[in-house]
Image (cartoon, rainbow, N blue to C red; front, top):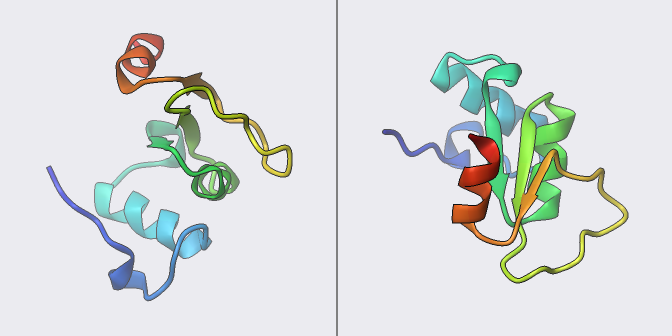
Length: 85
């Protein structure tokens, strides 16, 4: 119901301030949230903040070994929705 942007914290992902800001705005704990993204760096930042991660591969790209693996992985949003239920 809301759009949150990094402008409010004057920084960019994967800065921990971005994830802390989102959690504060949502009045949520990290364990209440799952970040769904296509960018591994974004998911790595969320994981560092204690947030569960879900990666949409859009056709099966490989995961970069430099980042910790996501908690969930799917090729499409529909496939991911089924996995998260």
